Each structure stands twice: as structure tokens, then as C-alpha cells.
Amino acid sequence: MDELTCFKAYDIRGKVDVDLTPEVAFRIGRAYAAWLRPRRVVVGADIRLSSEALKTALAEGLMASGVDVIDIGLSGTEEIYFATRELRADGGIEITASHNPADYNGMKLVREEARPISNDNGLLEIKALAEKNAFSPAVHHGVMTAYDNRPAWVQCLLCFFRLPPVRPLRVVVNAGHGTAGAAFDALAKGLESAGAHIEFIRLHHQPDGHFPAGVPNPMLVENRRTTQRAVIEQHADFGIAWDGDFDRCFFFDERGEFIESYYLVGLFARHFLHQSPNSYVILDPRLTWNTLDIINLSGGKPIISKTGHAFIKARMREEDAIYGGEMSGHHYFREFGYCDSGMIPLVLMLQIIGAGSQPLSAFIADARARFPVSGEINLVVDDPATILQNIAAHYRAKDARYDDCDGVSLAFADWRFNLRASNTEPLLRLNVETRGDADLLATKTKEVLALITAHRTAKEML
Image (cartoon, rainbow, N blue to C red; front, side, top):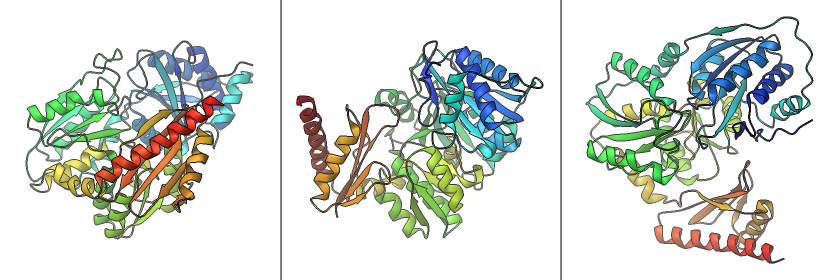
């Protein structure tokens, strides 16, 4: 029995033809079917050069298990979520490696109602079955049906378009040669039919698995420059860029400045709470003060959840939360089956900016000034757990408020930070924020980094 290293905490990812091959994809299809015992499963794929072959092998594994397959073709992850619910399928699988390098690929798996499958609720069992690779023959062979999911998906997104802009807008959209381009075009036609007067300036729009402009990952500073320049040169109202499977989106204000997604969580929370006061809003613990402040002032009920889409979605269902947001660029919506979408935030932003004359920077300026942030800092370490314990002990001795919802969060009156280990890499991820003090932010960020470096160096010397 060989170990399949492509299985991660929340999904499947690996290097093509090394960790993830068509043969492995076939076994995953068999294992998924053996574990879930579905009748119908939706499959789709992003634009990566290896995606179609992997999708075919996965579908063959499902059908060999007696499962009928609904193929929605080239699609983003959120389209799999939507189709699984809309078609009342028993599960869904998207072939994608999102923002990973071009020679990687993977899968995101859900069950009925697009409920995520992760290590906590089935992915480890699927892994074990795929590794064992001993499956009983099916009574009958499943069939594959092609289905155009996109028109219904667009209509669902247009339900969020309740207030068309009162003025014409110019918006830069950057698909990064990923999967977002064609999906966006369908949405843009729907917006036009709904009465929106918007000029979209398309960048790197044609899907191309060679990724001639680099892998679509707007979290990388170097990947933001094209969008920033276009916003400035085109005198656009704002810009948006997506990752490869467009389940995450990132915004740029009218000056081309990148907006930390943390501030957008507060902006969208206010938008929904204006419509539905007293609703629950879910946020992650990495950066919290601005979001908590806005939710409380807007009459909402905030709940901090462990980071990760499986945890956020479960808590949203539990509380029937109207909205959830992570500082990583994931936004979740009750009216989208508690799932994340990279297109709905665009629809919302068109309404927020189009409702008056204020630029996007004005909506963010107060939050930026009141709660400056470090941005997420990633550090390679050999023993994340030990360093986390040591850093927590250091600050708890100084009477910091402590929380271990996800990693460690330590807070003082005027500054706080969250330090957590990556679920897939030997990394620590640090986020620091203060109450209106940029100098303190720089000082405390440097202080925490120095402590981490000291502990890391001390361990290396042992």
C-alpha cells in the first residue's frame, strides 16, 4: 500500500505526474464513491493543462463504482458548490490547484448541500481507501452527462444585485489567465441585463493553463502591479483580481492601492447588517478588532471561528449567519448555501461604490487608520508547535489576554497578534494589529519576529 502524499488537511494537492496522476485520480474517484456511496456527483475543472485528464480519470473512477457523473466543464470552485446544491447531487469535486504553481493540481471535495470534506470529516478515510486500492466491483456502470450550470449560477448571483449603481462605473477585472474569465463574462451580461451601466476593463482575460502572466495569485505583491497600473491609467473606480479557481478575490481602490481583505470583511458585514440587523457574522481570529467594532456598531452578533472554509461553513450553518469573511480573501454567504464566492463580492462592491459619489478609498480609510495591520508574514520553521508554545508563554507572563481558537492570539490594550501554524507547510503565519498606532505596529511586529527568530536559532544550536 503506497502513501498518497497529495492529501492535505482540507483538500488534495500535489505535483502533477509525481504526487497526482490520472491513476491516482481514478483511485480517488473509487475511494470517494466507496466512502460516500453517492448516486450522482458533479465534477468540474479549472484551466490547468492537466485538469481535463485528471477530471476524466476521476469520473471514470466514479462511474466504475456505479456513480452517475454530471460534468459542468470548465468551472470555478464556487460553481461546483452551486451545482451540487442546485441539482441536489450527492457530492461534487472540482479539479483545481487554485494559486499553486502551474505544474501542480488538486481536488476540492464536497458532499450533499456542498458541505466540505476535510480531515475532520472524511478526507482521511477517503485517503486510506485510495491507498488500499481494493474496491468491490459495481453492480452497474455509471453514466456521464454534460450540464451547463452557468446560467442558473448567474441568476443566483444576480439575487445579490438589489441596488444597481446610480452612476456609471469603470472597473478593472483581472482573471490572471485563470478560470474566472468566461464565468465573469456571463455575469457581466447578467449585470447589463439587470440595468447596470458598468465599463469593465479586462486584463489577462483569456483562460490559458500556461499562465503567461504568472500563476494567478494576487496575494503575491509582484502579481498585483498589472492591476494597480491599469486602475490608475484607466481612471477606474476600483479593480478586482481573482485566484486560479476564483473562490478568492482581491480589491484595489481608485488609486490602485491593494486593500487588505481584513478591511473588506468589515465593509461587507456592515452592508449585510444594514439589510438584516441582529444577524450573526462569522470572522476568523487572525485580525479581529476592526470587524468586531463594525459588527457591534451595526447591531450584529459577531462569532470568531477557527480559520478554514470547513470550520467557517460549519459555524455559519450552526448559527444561520448572514455572512462570513476571512482575511485571506474568502467571503461566505448564507444566500449562497453558506459557501464562499469570489464573484459575489464584486456584485456587492458595485452596489456599495455605485450608491453615491464616495471613492472606495473613503470606505476603507477610517478602518486603515484606526486599526493598522502588518499584513500576513510567513516564516519557515522546523518545529512550529514548540515555537508557538514559547511565544505564548512569553506574552502570557506579561499579562496578555490569551486565546487558542486557532494558533495563539495574544492581546494587550493597544495591540494584539495571532500566530498560527500552516496546516500544509512548515510555516508560522503572523498577523499584528494595533489601535491606531502605526509606529507601535512596526515596533511590536519587529519584537515578535525577533522572538521567533531567537527561539528558532536556539533550537538549531541544540
